Amino acid sequence: MKTSHRAWPLFLAVWVLGCDSSTPAPSDDSEDTDTSELTYSPCDASKRAGQFIVELGEGYTAVQGRVLSGVVPANVRQVEAQEGECRLLRGRTLFCEPACGASQTCGEEGVCIPYPTARNVGSVRVRGLKSELSLSPSSARFYSSSGTTLPHPGFDEGASIKLVAAGSEVESFTLRGQGVSALVVPEEAMTLERSKPATVSWAPSTSAAAARIQLVVDLAHHGGIAASLECDGLPDTGSYTLPAGMISKLLDVGVAGFPKITISRRSADSADTSVGCVELLVLSQVDRELLIPGLVSCSGDEDCPEGKTCQPDLTCQ
Image 1: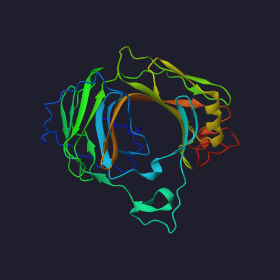
Image 2: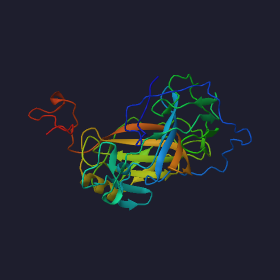
Image 3: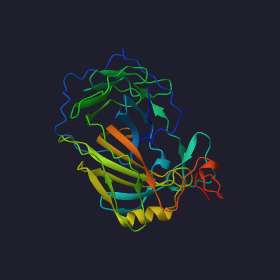
Image 4: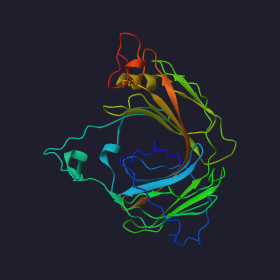
C-alpha cells in the first residue's frame, strides 16, 4: 500500500505503526454521525497537539494519527505578512541558555521544556467509512490503518464520518468529518513570477460539502528556516488567484530546488483536550511542480547546464 505523509507537520519521526481491528471500540451508539452542521475548524498551530487524517490517496484510503503531550514550539511559525485568506509563514529561531538537554526543547521566552511525546488516547473508532475501523496504539503510541484492508475509495463523497477516542492518558474526545471527492488538478506546472498574480485551478466539487481548499506554496523546503505561503479555508469553486504581493514576499525569502504547491480538499474539525487542540482532517491532496524563471532544479550535476554544478539546495549554480 502506498502511504503518504505530506500532511503531517506534527509527525517528524520514524513511524512505528500498530493496528488491531479486533480491539473493542468505545460505545457511541447514542450519538449519530450527522455532519450537516459541520464547520471548517482546524486547530490553530499554536494550540495543535494532535492530528488524525483520513486520506483519500491515489489508489488507497488510509487513516493515521497521534496525540502529543503538548505543542511542539518549532511547529509554530510566525506570520510575516497576510492578505485575504493567505499568510506568509516563517520559522522562528528559539534560543535557550543554557542549551536544552536531549529530552527537552527550547520553548517560549527562552525556557526549556520537556519535548512533547506521543500519548495513548485509548482505542480509536472511525465510523462512516465503507467498513468500520477500530485502531489501537502501537508501542510508540501511533495510530494507523496500515495492515488493515480498507475499501478504496474508503468513503463516499459527503459521507458523515466520526472519530471517537475512548481515552486513556488523554481523556476521550469525538471529532467529525465529511467525505470529500478526489481532487483533480491539471498536470501542467505553474509559473511564479515576482509582482505577478498566479491562478491555481482544480475541478470543483459538485456537492455542497463542508470541505474547503488549502493551498501551500513551498519554495525552499530543503534547508534553512522554513517559509511558505499558505491560503486556507478557500471555497471549492475551482480556482484561486495567489496575490502578487504575497508571491513577491515569498520569493524574497529565497528559493531552493524543486519548489512545489500542495493543493488539498479537506474537511476539518477540532476539539480542545487537556494537552491541547486535536483535529481530524478528511482530505484528498495533490502536489504540483512550480516553475520560477532562472531557477534550474537538480538531483545531481548531470541535471545542470554545462559549466554549472548541483548545489546542496538542489539548484544549479
